Length: 124
Image (tube, rainbow, N blue to C red; front, side, top):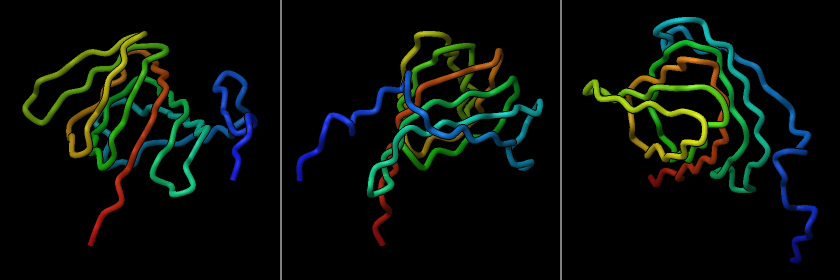
């Protein structure tokens, strides 16, 4: 099977739907951040996803089952692990969050990022 140039997704002109959502109460720590997700691509096996995410200020618990590459496009976020150690990420920062990471994600100023997610199938 040949894949054509039309299969390449350019984020700047992608017309993917935008999903708006609120965090579940059990995850919320502070604020009431409205979030939006614009998923530009999901692989046929549904393990690989990429798009744009944004959030208003607030903080919530995170528990990663997936691997995520992030590039901050706007704003500032602080990610804190369960031991209380944190890192601040701002415009231009690129980083990877490994599967199994738990902690808190705090959006200090409204944040927008590119995400690339890989979720490994569980083997039973």
